[in-house]
Length: 332
Image 1 (tube, rainbow, N blue to C red):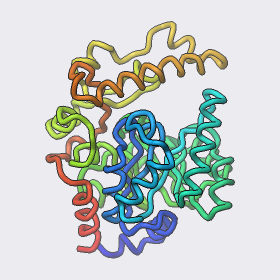
Image 2: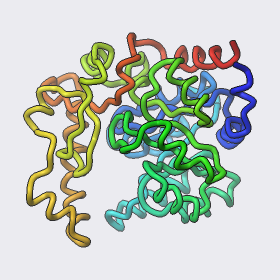
Image 3: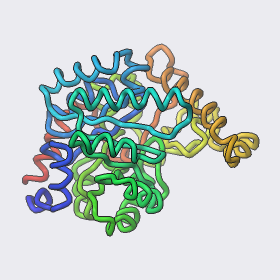
């Protein structure tokens, strides 16, 4: 068991992240509240800040939110997520400000999604920070490698939210020869799932759904209970939230909304110029639906993202206990 921690890729990731256990609490809109991020980092894993969630949903000034998380975690390392597709100049400027503030506040690990991460890599490397990029297949990974990233988050078809199309092993094989640590994202709900990913060759695991069903997450109790009750078949994908497949629990709201984008939406998404307009429309709709679903006073707005890892989640527990249990499994 101890040999898994001694694996060179695992050690490289632990060095990049500055943590003890190769477990990431993935960035989640709207579920990444400061208390959850801090609890994972305090236990030896890596909590990732999702800036839109921190500021828009949970109401914190970004700098003060980072400082709060630092205090709650006892000064342990945290990371930041950057969605970098340039949907608007206003958003791009805001993201640049968030990156600069994060670096000023000592954040030294970034997870980038969509777009070209080169400008973030340049800023991060100048401060001794590492950048890992989300990839659902090799062609996206190669573009990220060309931009100079330090590692990859391999998002497979069992992930919650925006997911990939490949199985855990198939995706790892595609990325194996790129020479950087690869983190498994999707399908990790318990220690057995975690060890399976490491045995395939992954350098660590990013968990999302598992950390929603925790005491610290501020998601509604009904959402957490639904994750615990759910089987893998209760997770479906819908295009109606963002224009691309999103993995969610198959609630009554999702059934009413439907799973396929309409004709006009598909036409707009296929156009070089119109796709950004359609993604903006879907993005606003998604933000409002997910934000309403976070509050207890909107039980009919249950658009709840989740992955196939629900199959191995059987309880709601402290986030730190999950990290510590995974760590004990490695050292057993």
